[in-house]
Amino acid sequence: MRRLIIIERNKNKLQVDTLAKDKKTVVVAMSGGVDSSVTAALLIEQGYDVIGITMQVWDPKITEVDGDFVGCCSLAAVEDARSVANKLGIPYYVLNFYDLFRQSVVDNFCREYLNGRTPNPCVVCNRKIKFGALLSKALTLGAKFMATGHYARISYEESAGRYTLRKARDYHKDQTYFLYNLTQPQLAHTLMPLGEYTKDEVRFMAAERGLRVADKPESQEICFVPDNNYRNFLRENADNSVIKPGPFLDLDGREIGRHQGIPFYTIGQRRGLGLAMGERVYVVDIDPAHNAVVVGPEEALDRTTLVAEDLNFISIAGLTGSEQVQAKIRYNSPPAPATITPLTGNRVQVKFAAPQRAIAPGQAVVFYRDDYLLGGGTITGSG
Image (cartoon, rainbow, N blue to C red; front, side, top):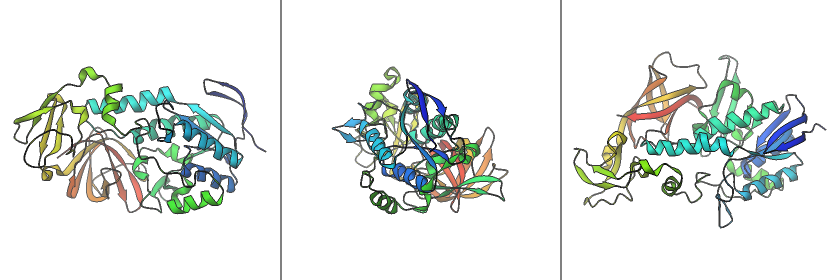
């Protein structure tokens, strides 16, 4: 039997004595949830030599709330992943990515809010941690592939000479929005076997195989913010010396109140403003240069254009001119018809056929053609 033999484990740095170096060796990123557990089981059944690895990216004592599972790095999650690995009879390890995660994901999360933007930590984590550091570790250990429990479909298109990413069969669970940053080399070494299944089918397969996580509920929170209160997290982890009260402005630039600090507000927010206006008002803009939060009526949230930067393309090599696409400005928004036009500096203008609500700088905008994920970028502004 092909086996991974660890001869030294010091501060989670693994040195390898032997590891099969063939196309059938795969590291599965195991979060302790049903999706990654079934991923491991399916790959074993397909003849792969599977190794389970859980990334410890945050303090497990912080990610426990009354003993409940609240994230992929809690002690309960590790125990569930270990139990599944034992049930499947595969090697299992926990690797410490805490420092890299803190620098790449958490610090960026805080910095973006301090700059008046709304970050997307899952996109950054996929780019820097899961498909960056963990995939690199898997290849270093001699594995041919890394596999995840994402709902998406990877294939190689001979006509284009490129790996492509398509929406999952289960549109309600499709996670391609978070994966637009994947590169061609990363896709070449990544497996996502759940793309052809629905969530109900995955739970059934877990129960059928006797996996204890078959009915485990999903965690919806940011994994390092256990109570889902990002404002408290910023108070405890961000540079509070730069968080200062400032003016609430109306659309005409008149001061109508005072806010607590721009990191505590997001585009589209209505509750918690503390303004007695006699009508509903929403955060429609954040001006970090003047430490101001602009509010207005709901219709002021509707915008038809945006600019995005830091682009990455998957199904196409890039833009040579304007393209007609379907674009999403957040994970739970439906794709909307839009025209994307390249700009200088790896930027693009996106013009929607119909106004979009609450376009937030810092979030991702992702482009599709039918089921194919073309690519995406980070929103810098709207108009």
